[in-house]
Length: 462
Image (cartoon, rainbow, N blue to C red; front, side, top):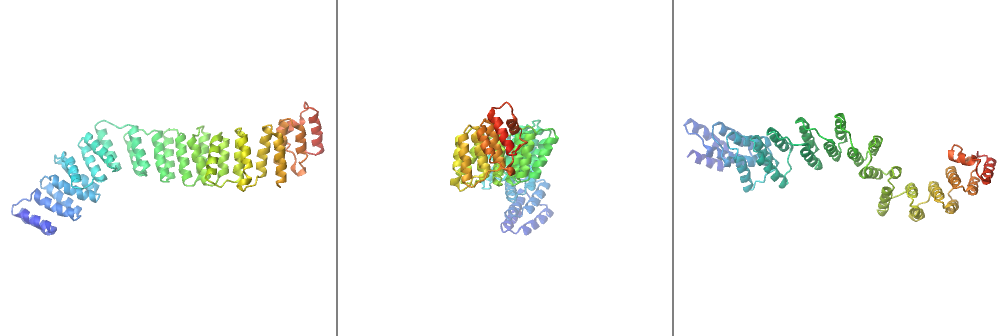
């Protein structure tokens, strides 16, 4: 009768006329039942009028009429499709209030059977309701199912699970929170990660340096360096000391956005604090310097910090990639190779310079000659000097001073005198050098030294 008319009107999508029948029904003492309301909810839901569907649902429950699984299926399908999580949770809460909490899972399963694939709203809604009624095992089961289906939980999902456990006196530890924050940060959901972090603090669980580092890394990944530094300051303010991972994370963040100077500043701060850089730390700062075209700074930093092997490995990688390498870089590499007793490699690298279209500078010759003398290869150093002059590269006072010092160290007095003769008045011997002064003024030297002293006086260089 009335239900048949309402059903026919709903089928014809004449919702207004169908609802108009409800009033005379009540006036004539005929009470609408579940089928009446289900018809109205169905047509509203199918037409995308989810607000009307929720209004009818509220009217239905206010009349004391219990919805069934069909009611919930229709409503949830519509609300989840439109991502109306607040209203969806209201519907599921109504199930619990009406003593139908066991139906939440039934509705969820039937939705899937009818081809309605659960999304974050659907899963979160079911989990929230299950948590609120204390069915934590079922909530965790749904959470795991959610993950398996590739549906990413939102902050509300996590929050409800956490609060549900806390209500039962089971408070998750920091490892649990760290895992969640890490997973969110990895996919760029750092705002949600921050919410979970704040929740962690609010329930009395104290984040450790690993959690702070993870959150900083999340902000660095989305290039929000101010936020990352804010986390850094917050960590320090609670007495947690930053470690090598902390600094490496921030340095990497700055280098990725081309702010190399800030990255270098933090790297230096780390060194001043006595924190030993890791291989990853060096790799980050060096690659940042390379990308910024500051190759000389990169090599110099490597050799100064006893990372010669790393420097040479990176150099070979760059050459293999046909990267542009200038004579300054080659000079630094040759020096580094000599420092690590790779004499053959250093000489080979020098020999390859002309083939690469570059010309050795006076600095390059300085490096080669002084190191050859240190290695006792003084005749090779002499030949190198002749080669330099024949190539049109004039020696400067720095080179000659260095050569004289090294020859004096080797007690090659005659050779030192030969190079000294090449120093004219504009290229005076560096008198402030303690090494050179001590060598020239030593009275216990052989006669050759005295002759050398007399020679130097004549040249007016002492």
